[in-house]
Length: 122
Image 1 (cartoon, rainbow, N blue to C red):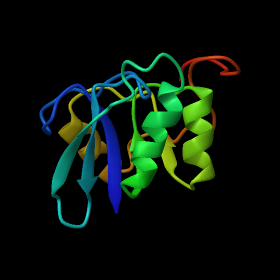
Image 2: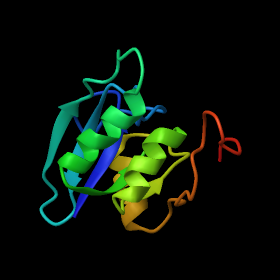
Image 3: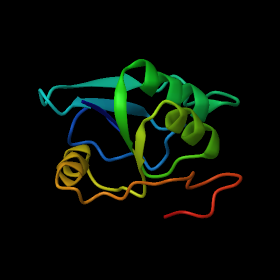
């Protein structure tokens, strides 16, 4: 299963980027093989719709789980519509959050955590 983590860098020692739509990029981690790849977020400087574009990138790359700091309503709706589980309010290195996910220590979110319509950060 592929897990997409918003990241400030291109390896597992990078920090989780607190933003989803305007993060630096995504680490796509395969939980079955423990291999990963880095996808730069081309939407980072978009004038609008960054969350939707970033979400589509994640969907197109086959992720079934997203781990990030916070997520806006448009990106949340795209990911939720694709059946992707979203875990938010996460900090630390990419490797540490993967370990925490595997240990069941992360909190799944059921709504956007920032932006219009959000009920506040988790």
